[in-house]
Length: 384
Ligand code: FEO
Image (tube, rainbow, N blue to C red; front, side, top):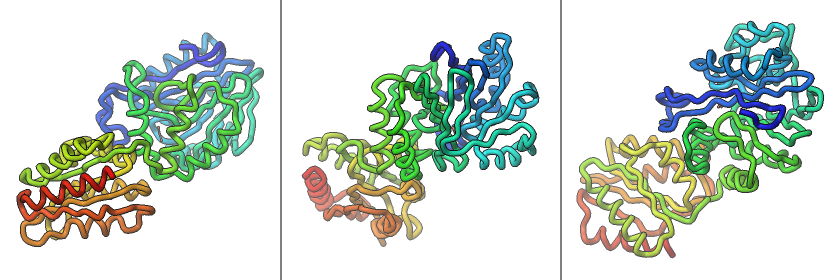
């Protein structure tokens, strides 16, 4: 696939992956993107996941049309992109490896070799001329590992963006970009909002025609839409006015309250209401929705003097990703000594700029008439 006359796509689609990065369900698979720049010098950018190296080498050989690579540019060392470095180095002994100093340390750890005799260490603002094409390197630490560099190709205004602007999903499946890009971003990069903000500031100084990420489609139209979403996500601002109700339920009583509240919110005119059963629904989707919407209701039972385990996991996912700038409400259930609200509030105490709803709902086993009044009050408060 030609991206421009000189840049070709040589990545692969993965429909075998069970859990991406060991935890994310990817119903539509995953793409590991890799690109080839053909100029006076020939540069390959990144490799792919270790299960797909044979296919990647086949794509590379086909795209090379008999030429041989001069450079392998390594933007990111996570194995979904770096697994082929040692095999590449062996197959093309004349090629130099181009990466950040930190990336070479990681290569030593992954492959037992830091390619000391054939490496080119690059940092912020360094350039690499390939002929008509010149790459300028932009450091992007913690987007999503510390060694990451992006590169900008000036003549065709291409940004090789590493994990930034990536998404779940293979490229041979049509799907909405934002939904799976948001779940990818919040899950994988969400903790590093400050670093993404720093990167966006650097990118604002570049005239970009196409973004070439390591996952997901190449972005080439309406770039301000994608960059705007990244700005929203990385600054932890809610993307949409709405409420996520995240619940766990042992015997269905807490679930009943959660679903009643969802209906009440819709009747009260709440623009968007999402509901997640944390024991059964995709955890990453629930985490994504918590960051997407402006308000969050946590509904759970007291369990072993704590909260139900899936709720603890969920809140941990939020706090480790710097959950902030939202309104949070609680529904607790406890048959003899309810402490769930206290525990949940305690888990969130270090989160910044949270507003707690004044209305609270305390269920003592089953939803009572009084609870229904409390739920109505909470719904009205959340839409006011
Ligand atoms: Fe796609 Fe951080 O690796």
